[in-house]
Image 1 (cartoon, rainbow, N blue to C red):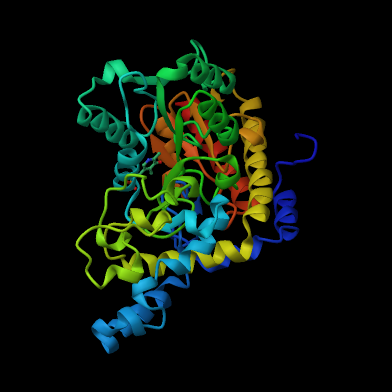
Image 2 (image 1 turned 180 degrees about the vertical axis):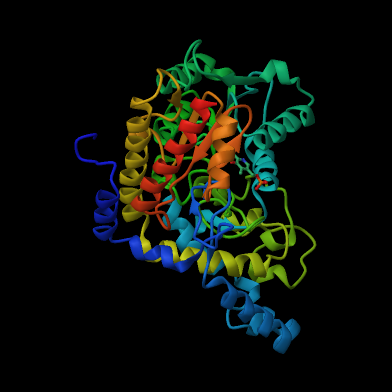
Amino acid sequence: MSNQFHNTLQFAKSKDLADPLHHFRHRFHFPKTAEGNHSIYFCGNSLGLLPRTVHRALEIELEDWQNLSVQGHGKARTPWFSYHEVLSLSLASLVGAKTTEVVAMGSLTANLHSLLATFYRPNTTRKQILILGQEFPSDRYAIESHVQWHGLKREEVIVEMIPEAGELLINPDRLIEKIRQLGESLSLVHMSAVHYYSGQLFDVSAITKAAHEVGALVGFDLAHTIGNVPLQLHDWNVDYAVWCSYKYLNSGPGGVGGIFVHERHSSNPETLRLAGWWGNDPESRFTMPQWFTPKLTAESWQTSNAPIFPMAIHRASLEIFDEAGMDALRLKSIELTNYAEFVLRTLAHDLPDEFLTILTPSDSSQRGAQLSITSRNIRRLYDFLTENGVVVDWRQPNVIRIAPAPLYCSFEDVWCFGQILSEAMACVIQH
Ligand SMILES: *Cc1c(COP(=O)(O)O)cnc(C)c1O
């Protein structure tokens, strides 16, 4: 890797020139620094940037509401009654599913509650649930409350996979071993496919296979995976997945989330769903039947009338992904993150030993567009970066997450970031 990259502005510019996706950055609004310049935005894993097409997409819905009022359900330019359907093709391609296996709805944690009701069904022998140590807290809280809801004790049924003593990352082979070891006591594996803190990407297919072999079900949280790494959820036989759309998918704060449910579950009328009228078969939805008849697709997990404004934003954003294509994005992402790692290692080379540590795996097949770093005086580095026009993410207790999202970040951004970081380090070392 190191011989093909150079830590120079000229090299970074030549990479941008050769990058077929470079022009996509002009489709987004960048926050400005105090001096009025573009920020270097490496925080798309927390909140993606605003696509320039969003204002118009929202205006269209406001106009239709203004002009058509209730008739907009059937007569809006995109009828509201079936609006969610226009998102399914893009979502299906992002996660590798059939259009009937995905739906844009609700928000991540609420959707997770609903899917846990379907997929976490402990019985006397099979009640354990395997999660990751240091998993994002919302997932842990949701799971803890389901365990309590079933009258079980957290200590007895939740098994946490943590790194081995002295290691920073979870060993993927140990994770598979753990699943086999839990065997027929294991009810469900629920985990992030990309870990929010370390940026570690797991082998979704291998984990799913191992869990199915012992008769357990598997669900993935794709908050940090969708729009970051290509997936094949259908072929990998994953049982369910949940995600939010405001991180790599750039669909705005609190934007509409989404779910995947494998068709072998959704096509079965016996599958338990926490129901609402929007999940009822649309053929009979407005005849107001007294009892629930699920549409036999992922849409049956919808409970409420769908949120048009967040979906209009989502649609504008997904159109950009359709155009760029996930495979091309992943190719650029690997190169861009490798370059960021190269720049960091070049800086670290001139520093006292162990001054800077990269937590994220070095192997690009085990990470997406994220590097989590820690160092001495890391909080001061973070403050210096922030004051100098670099937007990165701070995580307690001592990690900076850097996410060069390939849709709008450039090689020049990475090079500039390296320059600013090296100034920051010089300051921190001197003082
Ligand atoms: C961002 C994130 C969430 C956020 O959940 P919301 O319900 O959208 O607030 C949940 N889980 C993980 C792993 C996340 O990274």
